[in-house]
Length: 171
Image: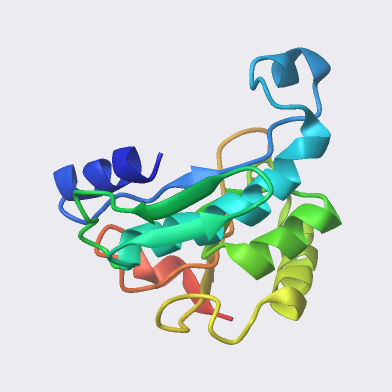
């Protein structure tokens, strides 16, 4: 996974933005993942810090509950050192994981009020250096359809060239 994501970052010239989620709560959808739902959060807890180490260290030795590596070297190295990693999620435990482990929150299918409440949980959990440069912002966009608001919130570095900066609000 680390090598595939790094390759995509190189091919995109450093514009790749990986996003992950634990998956929906639909049991039929969960079957496709091949990992039981209760195993997914511990997997994230091990893999995300490991990905960052693989992308930034020359050789990685790791002995965890699921993966063990000795002097692992992955090439190519990503252009971004390391790329930001965003998570989806709505449950309080998922929001705390966003604050602990990720650089961004993909708040799909949430209303602005839910984004505001989620942001509080994320900020309360996030370490001051949660992103590589400590800059965080939130983006909320209105979407089409029957007068309802669709919001997309993320904790992100606001200097990304393709991001409409007028939609960013510093946290």
